[in-house]
Length: 170
Image (cartoon, rainbow, N blue to C red; front, side, top):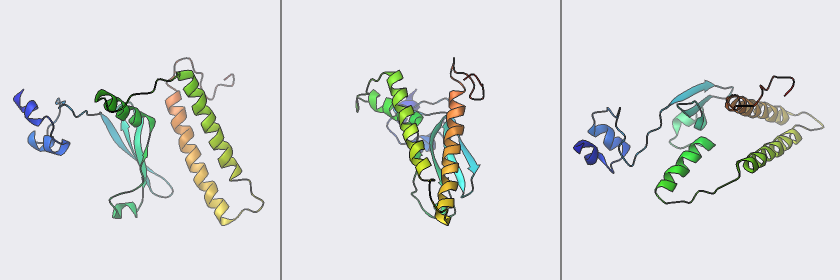
């Protein structure tokens, strides 16, 4: 299609404008579109904004607050799904070489890292006197760990051969 070729190398905004806002069915190289959703979840301190792919895996996210609405830039967390997609795109363009890892070894290293983080967070709650700072730290740790547990449980629930987290024999 001539229009497709005319749009090659244009930015996403330029492609959107040139197609009259209708990119449905267009996959204009070198741009790659990922189907997904933006999720807004209330938290104690604001709104967690996450971008998720079509399978609801988290790509990136941040906690929106009154302060973040006043600024252009804010801290954004990127997650493995997005990092892997970016690595794939870089590899396609020969910009990086992907490391080949043993998946079982990588899983063990990731679990060890999580266990080390949990021990570190636990030590942060082991205090002689509970102060206002301790309570604030505890609230933040509870939110972070609850979020991580919910995400890991959700992702792991789709794994074949893995028993339910609530199964007593697990």
